[in-house]
Length: 214
Image (tube, rainbow, N blue to C red):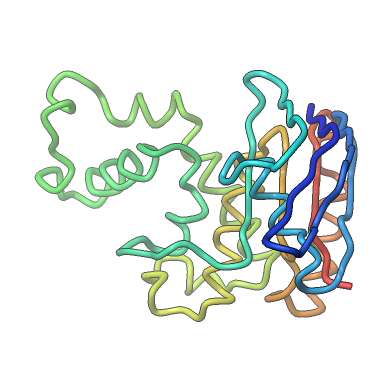
């Protein structure tokens, strides 16, 4: 799934990694433990290709999907909490909005040029849309969000609650390689216990890779 061979990374005189080697296989569950500044997030950045290693090679399995939860959430717009959790593809939320507009009796709001020849409900069913939404709501609840918050604009919630919505999106997606950078920071005890149990059942053919603050 993922192999690092002889990887080195420095910032000036500060060496984070020197000749580091790592192999991650499907089904592995790995915790990367260390204090702040040890280079955990930098390692994730190297794996994602966001910055180059000074030396060494990083090889990823071809066509493998990667899900990444950073320490800081990306900027949010007008998305609701459940829309963030359902954003499994770039166009899925747009399709979901159109279906809901039709179902609410507002077809004009759902009208798009491409809908003139396509049945939005049929396309939504092909994407297992209702199952995706149900799964997203189940995970959001497990992570401690209340049903009355699901349809609220995410910008009205706290940063920690928005982070939970992004975590829910990754759990809905079930990528082949799931990389989580200190995912438990914003979880209370109840949601943390739920999250641990959920990860125990994460598909074994996939990989869970977590940065954990020591």
